[in-house]
Amino acid sequence: MNITILDDYFDTLRGLPCFRKLDGHTVTIWNDHVQDVDVLAERLRDTDVLVLIRERTEIRAALISRLPKLRLISQRSVFPHIDIDACTAHGVIVSSNQHADTPSYAAAELTWGLILSAMRQIAQQMRSLQEGRWQIGVGKTLRGRTLGIYGYGRIGAEVAAYGAAFGMKVLIWASEASRLRAREDGWDIAPDKKTFFETCDVLSLHMRLVAATRSIVTAADLGMMKPSALIVNTSRAGLIAPGALEQALRLGRPGMAAVDVYEQEPLRDAQHPLLRMANVVCTPHIGYVTEDEFELQFSDIFEQIVSFAAGHPIHVVNPQVLGPAAVENDDTVAPLVLDLLEWIGSDARPYSEVIEIWRTSCPRLPVWEEANARGYLTRLHTPGGVAEVTLSEAGAAHLRANRDGLAGHSQTSSHIQVQERSKA
Image 1 (cartoon, helix red, strand yellow):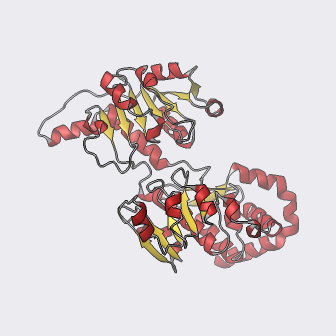
Image 2 (cartoon, one colour; image 1 turned 90 degrees about the horizontal axis):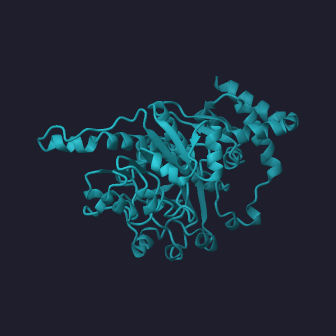
Image 3 (cartoon, one colour; image 1 turned 120 degrees about the vertical axis):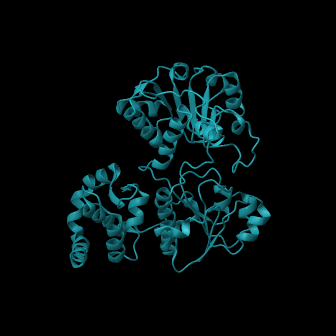
């Protein structure tokens, strides 16, 4: 197949170990950013599979209608930049793993790096040295201060843990369901939004940008923050009302900001107000931009392509495009999924071992793909370590609920064990 990858700014992907999954296909990689529909239509005219790097390029109906050969868009996470209805109308499958059990540790780490940088004026102090001067001010210690997490999802929970490790008081504000989860995890919950904004010394935003969360942070909210407080946004610029952050910083509440996301990206306007403020630390949307995170994300993205090429698309967000003929024979796959869960068991197994053994044993059945699509497996990945696979809570529950049915399917499990022993 002809595979095209857009927006790989530093030509990173071809150097990742997971890139080998695309062996045998013709891969074209574009390193610049283009949004012009005419240019994109020309670049993608022979493309069968389009790979997107997050939300860097918008794929709308005007473009999709000009790509008659396009059959699959493969990406990861949310997809507000893709016209799903237009894809469905033109027979284009959109596969996008939502990685329900895996936070972006890279984004959480960058959030913490920005907090440290802003509170200790690291960027400003470095600039002073470069200009031949010495210290330019006095920073603030984190220990004992209040860290506010607005939106308690996977990344927000991780940042909350960082705050606790630094001796900060952690305070949560989020949707009712998220507040309940945070309370169950042992965190303090703000009594209301007003108190939350008034109390926090550092306030970090961790929400997806949807209709309900657009402009959820208003100028009035920001105006309630302390003059000494810091607001951090590594999620999406649209969470804050347009122009409200710049105005609030000029008025002195909050006193600082750290920002990784912008309304228009890539941001190349050196005169943008946030870039001209001495009390703001800015980075160019690098929250997820690490080698480790790319390997994790694109292993999933390329796996979706491999599954599509094998005739078993996974993580499909527009299943209507598949039609009734594409529905899998559950009577065949479901027992093998149980076998896989039983084989992994309560301990983690190396990812490479799981892939090799199960792909060899069931080469024509999407057992691994189905288990992932149903959220039964969790991939564990420590930077510098070996990627492992374990059962998610859903997988463990599914195994417990159906364990009795495994007795009638021992033949497959025995085959797996023989394969495994032969490799020992």
